[in-house]
Amino acid sequence: MVVGICVGETSLTEVTFISDKMPKVGEYVTIEYDGKLVLGMIENLIMGNDALNVDINDFKAIQKISRIGVEDNYIRGKVKILGDVRDNLKLPRTPVLPGTEIMLADKDILKEIFKVKNPLKLGCLVNQSDVEVNVDANPILSRHLAVLAMTGAGKSNTVSVLIDQLLGYTVPVFVFDMHGEYKDASFPNGEVNVIHPKINPNYMAFHEIRRLVNIPTNGYIQERHFRKAFKEAKAMLKDGRANSNNFLQIMYDILYEKSLEEGSDRQIIDVMNKIDDSMDKYSKLFNKNAANILSNIKAGYVNVLDLSQVDEFVASVLVSHILRNSLQRSKDAAHSDNKEELLNNSVFFILEEAHILAPNKRESDSKRWIQRVAREGRKFGIGLCLVSQSPKTVDHDALSQMNNMIILRLVEPEDQRHVQSASESLSQDLVNQLPSLNVGEAIVLGLMSKVPTLVKIDEFKGRRHGDDMDIVSHFKDIKQRRAEELDRQKKETLDMGYDY
Image 1: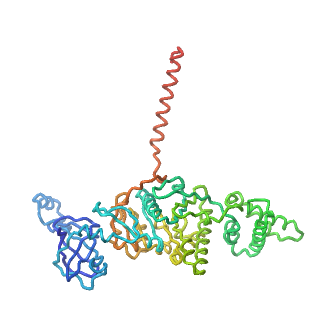
Image 2: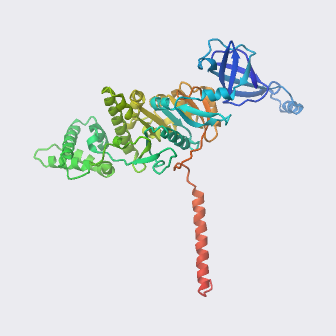
Image 3: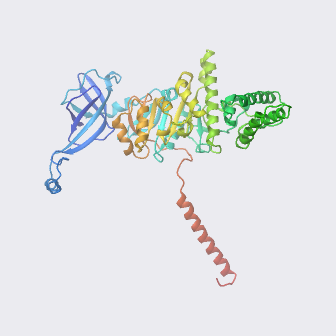
């Protein structure tokens, strides 16, 4: 089927065409020339009329022309060149000749394009529901992924579909669950392993606890007292001399004993006060009997760290603690030359609310380690997936390391600009399509797919808790229950022989 004819100047990366019938943005086309069969995607369409151009300012004249029923309507579109189908999608060395016909891509060609080695089925083409869209799992796990969308566009459904597909390969998936969406979920391809946010202080670095207690980096005397108490508390836990599970309480008691000594430094009291302030907030975070969180990860499970009951600061500490330990563990395995052990330590981390954990305009512990894993993780089998409904507030450095993106509907221009600046393969024409995507439709691009794709994401077949609350129905039910209770009371009164 002929879609249009190439016109004007053509290039190695795009061509303009004129059509007599309206194609669809996102449709794949082929152009045959010089022994090549070049695949392209329609990225832009406009319709115009030479007789009804914008330079006519007379309303009555426009009205008369439109009543006549002019036939000068034209359809102009732009095709992005994706590569030669006959040569492994390599870009052609010569441009197409103007006047060459553009054909709608054959379904068999598209099915071949979406054949990958380790397929993850995301859905089907928006414009051709009979063509499945499969992406390659390995580039996602090794080169990271971002799932970005405005609220209500289908982000949670997309993440759930992705998780379920990864479970089919027994990949250990670890979700930092900020709102408790996944702890009670069910997945057709695997089970959920809920991990509670408890840290054994023996596995914590000094700087992690120092930041919890808010000891300033330039407070050298306070830091010295705090460091001594930290080391002694760890030693007491190790040899069983501690009388408490509360690590902060142990440190407080150590400093209290020091403060009673004659000539003790007054700054010990300042450190004790800071520990005391942190005690109520963070005492439940520590458990000297807890195993290393990484040792609780199970392959083939959705390992969910439930962060719904902790504040953002504690969440940041937990994320940085886990990513730091995971990266160090994998580095140690890599230096041992044991490839099997390195692969066994591979984890795919999914960070919900990435704009909180890796904020764009402020520093945090979690942000530093997210950036580091984003840069180094691929060498050591650690993958990241950043999920956010506010892309403009996600750290640009971390986002630019995501070599794969699933972008659902985005309306906010600043969100669009931020995402485009972080992605090499998101063209302005594709950005212009983001506000017009329907719920569940996404632009998929990156190393996981041979070509940029407009996808209708499958509906997740399991159960999760990320949907909006039906508040109206709840209160409607309350009103009905009250009316039913009133009717019951009336009936009881009448049955007892009393007038109501």
